[in-house]
Length: 79
Image (cartoon, rainbow, N blue to C red; front, side, top):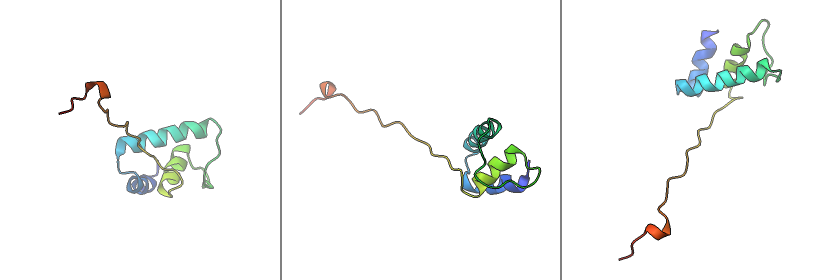
């Protein structure tokens, strides 16, 4: 693993568990035959390709939060 690419990827996604999930999912995709989003250098591992994609901003992550629970109209008390 290229530590320079790791540091650059951490600047883009500073949440370490999220970065691990993004990179591992992308490595599985690359191992499954998907094409890289950039031209890999010679003898570059799929992990380094995934880190480079994150570092260059070609691969991002988005966290979706569930909407807050609103009380049902039946449970409201009007004064």
